[in-house]
Image 1 (cartoon, rainbow, N blue to C red):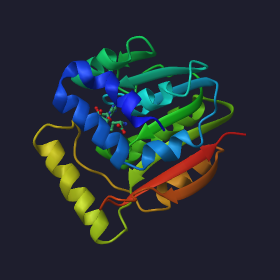
Image 2: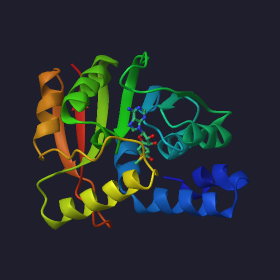
Image 3: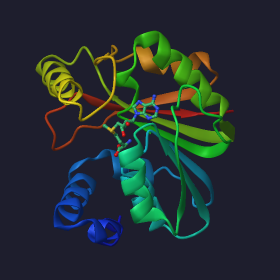
Length: 211
Ligand SMILES: C[S@@+](CC[C@H](N)C(=O)[O-])C[C@H]1O[C@@H](n2cnc3c(N)ncnc32)[C@H](O)[C@@H]1O
């Protein structure tokens, strides 16, 4: 994983943006976990892509992987475009209503918990429907039943919503087995791994593979 090269895409946005991109890419284990499982070709769709860190890291894998991202936060999409204009197709859209293109890999990292459970379930169904045969869905989110880690995650995410850093109706964490069950109900074979190394959060990565 070439963090320095991927993060350098953010250098034109200033030292803070560069430093934040580098720190997030290095410090959050989700990116390496997804990269290790990505196909080398086909299309990666990043739903709720934010500033595009996952896409920037995937871009370092070569040009055979087509990169598509969407997010409903216009400012974040703007920052992602500045970094990835040459490499990714990025749109400002709400994942709950967007027309999702088909993909070999769909990432939805730290996005679901900003919507209530019924909307999460509907969105997971839409993400699963976007998968091409044999495609993989990567859902990373925090568990509601991981003790103090869940409390800390809920607190820090609620603060981020309260101060307007993230849009949302609140923070809606699910039990460890809930999202895998929703994915399995959509026909995916699901594996769940802890994805919080080096952080205090309650994060899990659910990987679902389409038949
Ligand atoms: C914590 S950030 C994670 C960004 C990115 N996935 C990453 O891991 O670097 C959550 C992102 O999800 C986006 N988001 C939340 N709900 C969304 C929705 N319904 N449609 C599109 N984007 C959404 C937010 O705007 C924000 O950029």
